[in-house]
Image 1 (spheres, rainbow, N blue to C red):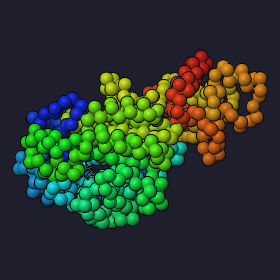
Image 2 (image 1 turned 135 degrees about the vertical axis):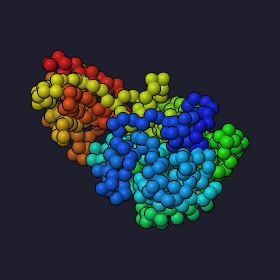
Image 3 (image 1 turned 90 degrees about the horizontal axis):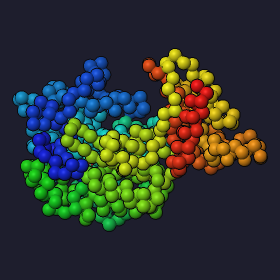
Length: 491
Ligand SMILES: C[S@@+](CC[C@H](N)C(=O)[O-])C[C@H]1O[C@@H](n2cnc3c(N)ncnc32)[C@H](O)[C@@H]1O
């Protein structure tokens, strides 16, 4: 990856490395995206002192933080150190490493209440891009569990850097703890300082590594005590110091500025593809000792190659997404799991353009039915029960404007073959078939975990099916097709 900070330079190849994460919207050469009408303004709420307390209730605040470009003039009013680097015309010079470093410090303080100290000769992380990774991880982890969102988790940040940015952002938003590794002494000592500055010594544990050690130190004593829920990584991007130098020169900024990072941070043999390849190979041994393995990528070509490798290895449960800040900066992220829990559609298939369809994992959501807004929902729920043959189907829950039914099936109970078999040998109640969703109550094999959502919107009521668990996309498709036909038949 790159820690690019310069505004206005050209991308080399579509889909490959890009430029700064934040641009000045008033810069005519590089205005960033139009400000989106109707989105929450990121002006501080005058009635609130600082960001909200961590937890699911703060998700909305964090999700929309960078929907619009930061208002530099407002930030300068809040922070005299930022005012000192802002030009009188309200522009920020993104070619000046001191200015971009201050922007990172100011955003972390203003938006997250985090303090940070960074050396001049190490990577200075652009906050919105790093924040995007945490937002995606929250979605990935929340939607791949039957537990309510927001439970305590432990993450491993491979190559945390001097900033220790991912653990700082993650602990600020959720009751997460982290093991964070690095191979560079200076990074490790600054990371420790940043952990201390924020009083996070009990939640972020640093583990020094050697370059040839495994990336995932599962045998390390401190890791042995804590099961790892997810691995995250922003890998060194370049394959050689020459590639890094020439990239910095093309962006007209001093090689080895804080924007670029030091070679130890940015270069590894084979570049990011090789580094993530190492992670993939380790994961093939460790399998479900970690629930999700994830990485950020700076090159679309790396994402393509890695998805191919996952498929070759028979890893069917994966998620891809893109992180877009403004119009120019684009990064990708890839996650994979050996477990059966399927991420929600938006987390698994976060790349919008149809051209990337070939990279996407199978869909995990399908529309079943739409009804007029005033149609009662109880008959729909009754029809769903009827459709699956009157079996004790689903545990339903209701929250504002939506009914959610969770079910787990040990086989394709909707197929004609299964129903014929059932007629011949009636099942004992609760044996086989569709089970209550709670895995603790029903530890039996589950081939398809699903959720039916009946959502009463302002203009219509929609009924959707979501794939929650299982490895067989055809089973999910078949169930979706069956339910849709049944619901439409009886409409
Ligand atoms: C691109 S930087 C990412 C830093 C930080 N996570 C961020 O996103 O700003 C890559 C980091 O990985 C570290 N690194 C390189 N090889 C490593 C290895 N084998 N194990 C752990 N960390 C490594 C580098 O020192 C550097 O801090």
